[in-house]
Amino acid sequence: MRLWNVFVEDEIIWKTPSFAQDVSESEERQLRAYGCELISCAGILLRHSVFVINHAMVLFHRYYYSSSFRDADVWGVAQAALYVASKLEEDQRRIMHVVAVFRRMRLRYLDASLIEEPMSDEEYVKYAFRFERDLLKQIGYVCYVEQPHRFVIPFCNIIFKDIDESLLKAIRQKAWNYINDSFRTTLCCRFPGENVACGAVYLAARQVGITLPKDIPWTECLDTSVEALYAVVQELLELYTQPAPQYISLLPFAEYSRIKEEKAEKEVRKREREQREEADEARRRQERRREEERRRDAERQRRDQPARRDDTRRGNTGGNQYRREDERRDYDRRDNNRRKY
Image 1: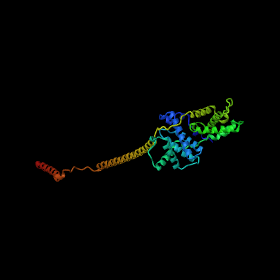
Image 2: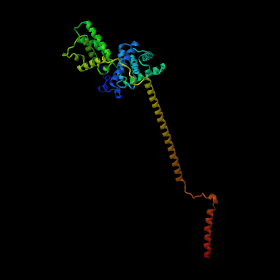
Image 3: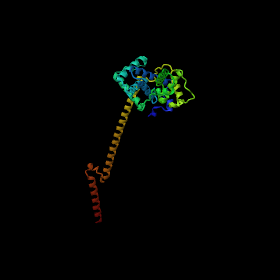
Image 4: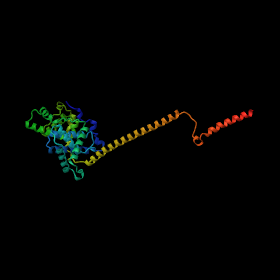
């Protein structure tokens, strides 16, 4: 069974995330080759098999089809890819050994101006685990890799039936070498394994002096189209014309760590600020609700209280005001009665 979701879509091949962030095609090609060189050297020092190294290169290429070279440093991604591939191929090494090898390579290959500040072993291990989580998240945990090596011997037996055994062995070895070199390119993310193996066998046959017939559709027997064969051959030939890869510091290690930490701290401060604002708003709403309730209670008491005379001045006059008015009315009544008689 083949998983087709491991191959990159055509619109992403030429418009990678690095291209969207103003990284030129030559810089991206050089950084990809440099990362594969780091994986190869570290794998040899850690005594990994060639399948672990090739698997790590495939994971490395897939990562940078979903992330940019400005977002993650080549050294950290190469280290994480090799560590993950060693676990997938059941040839795992201790994380401290992987970290020690990459620290040694960093001191040897990089200039002093590009080396980050010294850190403790625990910090280096945390750095490696952070890149491992980031790698698995970016590739969507799709770690399946189809190794084209298993197609070399069947293809050679189908195409070269009547040639000398020593010549056939030389073709197999050269095709094997071409396949190992193909992992330094993006062929592993663009074409199935039989297409890469067919191109490697074609180049190996041409190198030993055997010309394959053009009038016979021998590529169809190998489930490969002529267009795919020429694309694989052209990519492999361009690989050997490239100069030795050099490191390009698009984003230094220390700068990457600082930006990540600042971003995490900014997110924490933002969440804390939002929580404080929500708590203040809830407190203000509660105070407004209480004030409204007090106002309603006062209004209700004022409405339910019976009307009564204003006795505010009674304390000053001792109630004589109302008494004088009664006496005046009585006096007027008696005066009227007196006038009658």
